[in-house]
Length: 161
Image (tube, rainbow, N blue to C red; front, top):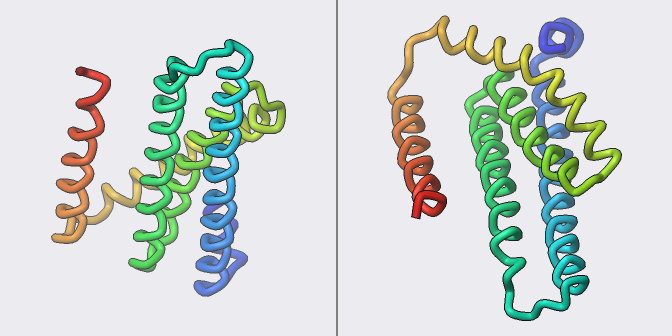
């Protein structure tokens, strides 16, 4: 898919395609967030619980969407840096997380999209790793790595407590 896009589209066309994909991915993340909140509210109504015991489930579902938004932001940063393969990979990851959550909510189209995106994750991850191995890390890449390690550490604390 990436080789086809590189062969058929000039540099500017590839950037436009990635931006369109980023907007579609953001729409998927927002739509999934709305579905999660609606599902939690329906679940609370069905159980007639007003104390908020459904909220831990909502919080855990929203964490998945926060991670998906993080992937989406890294993809936009990669587009800004003028790269093609990293944004596609991170958008694929964000879309996979969001559609996987939709799949867990028993959405038929969410399940279908999840399986399609899972199939494409392997080649995009391979392309990303191949590109990253082929060049030495620059100072901004190291800064992004340390930032992401710090955020991962912070996000790992709530489940452990």
